Amino acid sequence: MLPQIDWSRPWYDAVRPAYERLGLGGEEFLAAFNRSADALGLCNDAGLPLRFVPQSALPEGRAYEEFIGATGQVPTRDNLHDFFNGLVWQTFPLIKRQLNALQAAQIAQAGIGKSRGPARDAATIFDENAALLVVREGAPGRELVDALRAHRWCEALHEKRAMFGHDVRLWLFGHALMEKLVAPRKAITAHTRVIFVGDDVMALSLEAQRAWLDARVAAELAEQGLATSNFTPLPVLGVPGWWPGQDQDFYLDTTVFRPKRQH
Image 1: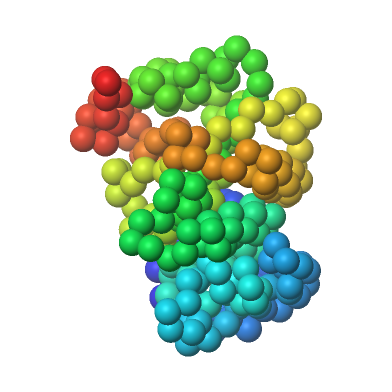
Image 2: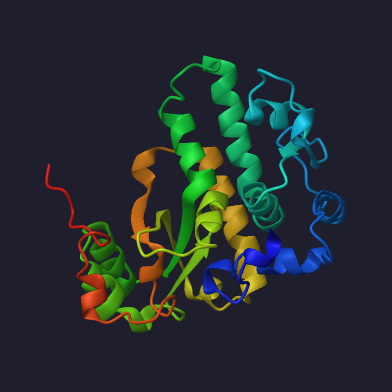
């Protein structure tokens, strides 16, 4: 299973350090996850130590998110989806904790119905498919984000490509998104949350920037909650340097880089 992952891909930059810390020899990752969780002092929103447990530990009929919130135990299957979920817990633990708290609170309030409701929907989308776009504050960064939100793809991703790496950095968060990118396709699209930052944050090492981002976004979620309107779509293989052949025609493929719908 794990040999399918090409760790040289730039979209795994966010979770690669967590993977490397595990020192996995074989494919048994539960024990390694728990060693890492202990070393990092991970806990849920109630302060309970985080433990990764077999899926069979989740009682039938009990909501996954509510179970984590009540016990600190994360039911984990032996598959890529849950493997990446565990890595994200070890990479962005504060955001994961806050998302779980939002989801558990919604379940406590509304129960488990056929519909998740808008707040829980947004939290699930974030958890599964989000990416964090860190943009240097200033007019050029604002213009790039405006172009992205207006689906002016050539402008944002081709004409302004030199900004990526220096003024713009994408951190993948969603574990389902990471799983899909094991077999990359041009159409794979992230739900992107934009975070404008000062020069001080852009100057941080990647590890320090990750920790800053984890704390900042978790605090924003706690203060503001979450709605699906917080996201802007971004086809991941359109990130400059993340895929070969990114000429202008690449971004003119309207089956992937779709024009903005007019209301």
